Amino acid sequence: MVKTSPNKKLISLKRQPLVLLIFSSISFLLILFRLIFLQLLNYESFKEMSDENRIRLIASQPIRGRILDKSGHVLADSRVKYSLIIKPQSINKSNWEKHKLKISEFLNIDSNLIQKKYLDGLNNQKLSVTILDDLNIDQLIKFKENEDDLLSFHIATRLIRNYPYRSVAAHVIGYTQPITESEYKFLSKKGYKLNDLIGRTGIEHVYEDFIRGEWGGEMVEVNSLGKFQRSLGIKPPKQGKDIELTIDINLQLVAEEVLKDKKAGAIIVMDPRDGAIRAMASSPTFDLNFFSKDFKPAKEYNKLFNSPEKPLFNRALNAYDPGSVWKIVTALAGLESGKFPREILLETKPCITYGSQCFREHNDLGFGVIGYEDALRVSSNTFFYQVGYGVGVDEINKVSKKLGFSSLSGIEISEQENIGLVASSQWAKNGRGWGEPGRTPWVPEDIASMSIGQFVVQVTPIQIARAYAAVANGGYLVKPHLAKKDGDDFSDKTPIKIDIDPKNIQLIKSGLRKVVESGTGVSMNYGVSNLPPVSGKTGTAEDGEGGLDHAWFVCFTPSENSELLVVAFAQNTPGGGSVHALPMAREILKVWNEKK
Image (cartoon, rainbow, N blue to C red; front, side, top):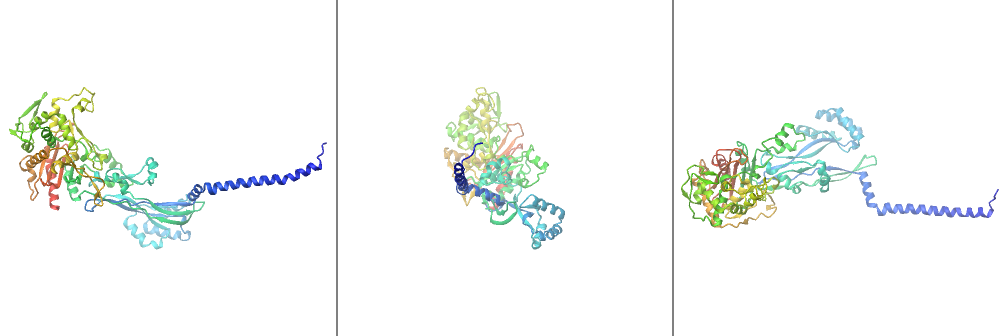
């Protein structure tokens, strides 16, 4: 047996305090480093985590800004939806039974249902529970009259979008919808919340950031079990800004009314001096309040989204065959090219052959030898066939671009807009948009169709409005616009001087005046008194898609120093522009003149 010497035992005992000291020191340093890490280096992140565990936010919805017409009439605002709620964790249990029975009696609510919702809120640590949604006026008054005896209950408000005129200017105003979960992933960074409203179309969409406002809310403190402790303060929501439109509700209402008996169509009323839109209507239309409903019946939904009538479609910004209202473009191409000067006289005929087809005069007789003004006055086809064929497709295309065709108009709601089509020789060489390059060449028949606005020309009512405004105002291309801010436009809308001889524009203007004085638009003067002089152009267009004829009428007044321009379009309404479109424009001018 080996024995340990007394000296070695003594040395071992002396080392034990040193080992203990080293171990204690290392442990202390580790704890110290950990505290430094927690308290100094990562203080902010841990504080944030702590606050998230003890602070809750009860959000308050912002009030969306109103949409107004030019005189302040409300086109869109927010309606308050009232709901009866409880805050389960802050209820005083000593008077809960009394309050519950009273509210059950006053508002005719099952007390067992109230109790069930209360217990569910407690068990799931909910800060707020809805007892009754969307109170009517009578229920709200009863609650307010007895509020002092119902301290366990509160009224919560929720805002929904409201459109007082329902379907009026629906395509201009647009609608809102709750954001989706996929949208929330990136919109949350901009302050949106799940089920928050966002503008989908029209002004609601374009000026979303201006209208929407900012969320507010109440911060409450809870304990580690999630139970309410106290309120830490309230931040009121920030109301969105109101937006004033250039729309005149009086003109908008009559525009909607005159379209009611048409299968489909559009009206644009514009100030030709600056492009301010006074009315824009598209038919068929739809009730904007449909989108504010929590429950949307399938029948209403299908009628809106799956109907062949396409009520959501804005026809004021969609492209159609323009027919004879296009003839001012062909006329200006002839004048600007120098091949058909202002004094030119051409013989009109029953028909003129191009390629394999004889293109007829609309009266099947001709109008004799006439110049530009009379050609516009009687809307001669064979006069403009000769001008169009003489200058060629590319000259017409060139002038059309100066007048704003083949491009977006610049109106704010451009997500609804079609740029249309004005043919060119290159377009034909490239396949016309459907064929193989080199296999669809330009043919003689095309130029006859193009000269009078058929088949190889598709334009929108808003583009027609811009082109005629350039004639009315003496040669300036305006930018159509719908909204203003504090009396100033949101962006630069300065009209652009176009590169067309003012004398040529004046000649077209004189011809348009003759249309209404003694030509195809003479019925503008029937049954109307005290109207200032009106200039205009009728149009009847074959539908390039095979439907019934379209009817057009464009006019501006007064003929000199014009203040108002109207484009009236009746889709697939055979019978002529003077029969179907002109009367719509006349009603608008009557209301404008009376109000003025």
